Each structure stands twice: as C-alpha cells, then as structure tokens.
Length: 148
Image 1 (cartoon, rainbow, N blue to C red):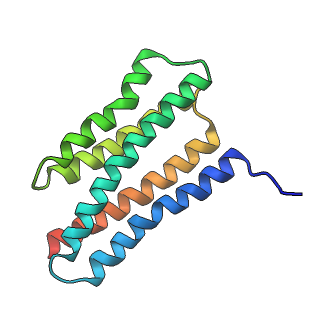
Image 2 (image 1 turned 90 degrees about the vertical axis):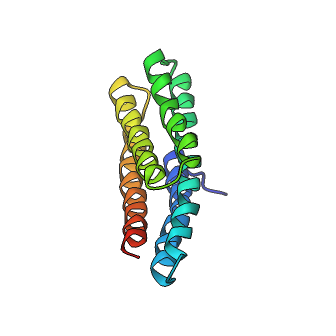
Image 3 (image 1 turned 60 degrees about the horizontal axis):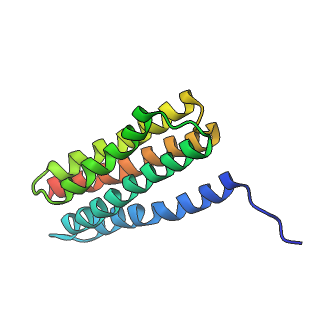
C-alpha cells in the first residue's frame, strides 16, 4: 500500500528542488570566469521574480482556504510581484536589490500570516530556511559579480 505524504513533507521536497537552480547558479558563477557570474545572476533574478510571485499566490490560497483574507494581507501578498516584475526591466544593481527586497517582503507576509492564523507554523519554518538559503545564494553571486 502506498504511503501518503503530508502536505508539509511534499512542500519540503518540492522546495528543495526549487533551490537547485540557486545552488547551481552559485557553482556556475564561481566556476566560470568573465561574464559567467553576471549571466548566472541574470538567470536567477528572473527565477526569483517568478518565485516571489508564486509565493503571493500561495499566500492568497492559504488565506482563502482558512477563510481569513484580510484586505491588507491580500495586498501585502501581491507587493513582492509588483516589485519583482518591474525590477526585471531595470539595469544596473537595482534588480538585485529590488528582488532581494521582494523576497524579504514575501517572507514577512508569511510571518504575518502565522500571527493572523492563516499560515501554518511548519510551513513558516520552511519559509524561513528557504528564504535564508535563497538570499545567501543571490548575495554570493552578486558578490562574485562585483568582485569580477
């Protein structure tokens, strides 16, 4: 008989897979000289914009499922996407800083959700860890780009 996975176990596994591009980007940035780091950062910032937009959708889903959808929380859930997509159209260091800010705001939305009761504690712990890992990867690649 097949053993069913809990939602948190499945989310943990899928989240681990979602981190693979960030870890691969760090490897690529440090393994390739020249423009390799800038190219890895460019790719991962686009991926990060997608991720923070996805997180907002997850937050909306959890709010609606819990029948707790305060307007201010729903607005907060879309702010990261509203920061992320224009950041992709900019040049220079702005996309880097804006997307890191969007990631932090998305995490703060989950922290708020735990206080409001629509976000589970187990999922929140996963979000804390993954936010730290993703931010560290992006910062490492950004440091490599600046260092040359």
